[in-house]
Picture (cartoon, rainbow, N blue to C red):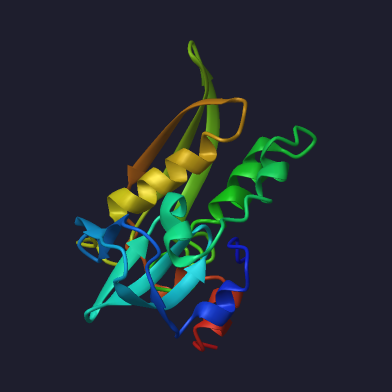
Length: 189
């Protein structure tokens, strides 16, 4: 599910000069940085609504709000299902989490097996989404970025008033948690 408009797949592997300054995140440390206008980047992954680029030998994540800096426009068509109350809320949540991608691996976090659970509970403030997730490696600095992406997207579901994402490492992640589709995509099957 590629959510960026304009043939973003055609951009993968190509050098692009940034059209303007943009905020970005160094992978895998999660350190914020500023990429300046006219910096040449090589697109390595354009999935979901963010783009991974290589800059001076480093992988860097350009977030949804800054993809215009490389001439792309996010495709927000996935939002139509988010508000469709005829679809079960849990199904909507799983669907929207499939638009979150690991910035290093071209697979969404659901098929990668990083989401261990998703449930909804009504409390005195309204409907709360509880998400249990893990990382492919416990020390990965991208954890907070993935958590914030999940939180932001689940909050797009109108009935949800709060999102709690718990990072768990038991059981530890392994390739066995990946969907067959993800394994095929990564040539593990």
